[in-house]
Amino acid sequence: MRPISAADVLRATLASFRRSFFAHLRWNVGFVVLALLVLCCVTIVVYMPAMLLSGSGSSIGIAIVLPVFAIATVAIFSIHQGATLAIVAGERAGAPISSSDAFNAGFARIEVIASAMLARVVVDAAVAIVPASAVLVLLEWVAEGWMDPAVRIALAMLAAYAAGLAGMIGVRTFLGVSGPVAFHERGGAVAALSRSVELLRGHRGSMALARVLWAVIAVVIYGSTNAPLLLVAAAGMRGGVATLLVTLYAFVPYVTSLMLLSFDTTLESVFYAERTRKDDARDIARAFE
Image (cartoon, rainbow, N blue to C red; front, side, top):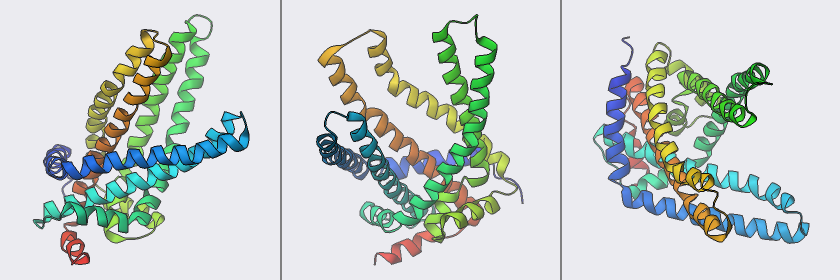
């Protein structure tokens, strides 16, 4: 079979993202606001009692709240990923699904989506840590004694990030459609990963290229949203104003992450549709009749 063109996938992804995300903008914005409120409430409800129980030991409170925060974030991202998959499937099949039904679909399949997402995160971490650690050790060995420590730390962070990103892109060439597989075929995490490897056989070059091009765009977008925080740090601002600015602006990268995840999910959904040519939208629609 002729490999899927990465350029065609990106063009189709941009078109689907424009229709799936912005056509349902009110629901997406509402979901983001609701997600932020949930995370804030979770943090307050869990962190404050933990602080009271641990006295002044704030580290104990943080240690308790971080896993809860992570679980809530995975649940939120899983629901949104499921909704995006449902919208894209319906849009591509010519059977549009409403925003409410799409988010109901994401909520109904949160378990399989979250399990596949977590499984891929584990693989991402395992693959990314090795090259990143090797780069850090090599840079420390080469630069020690003649390079300014601050410059060395900055270069080490950039090099580790680049190495980790390369490892993650490598993972995506094998497991890049595990999310749509979990959503549409409703298998377990291992089955979703295995099925993704099968579907991408012979098309890994196209998936890798599409991921590389998208990674460049994502880094630029995410970096630009974090620029104001860097300016605050560079200006040496201190006190209540700086704290308020940083706290309020911390929501922007979160919203950006959700948008990038939506685009990433759309890319996976388009690639999955190209490989399977299945009309899952009618199954989705029938589930809510």
